Image (cartoon, rainbow, N blue to C red; front, side):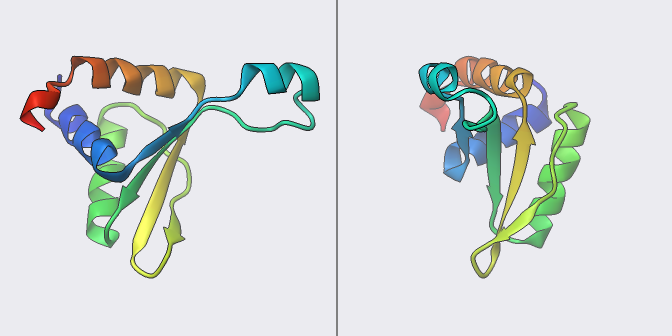
Length: 100
């Protein structure tokens, strides 16, 4: 695991979150009504951390979306797509949680 990947995993474990679509609801409601897709959100505690996350995501070839303010001082940085979610899940499986 690269140094940047490890840092991203640690930040994700601190307060990130992941969304996967509900396949059953997507079938019943259809893709036009149910628009939830695959997404990861990393949460930065300040602008400096946000900039570091953006660099690490770029180095590890994750394609970040547009960051947005979340509350007074925190920022959310989304990454969209099934491939990104699967990559993060693989990194989480290979991360030694005992050391965290």
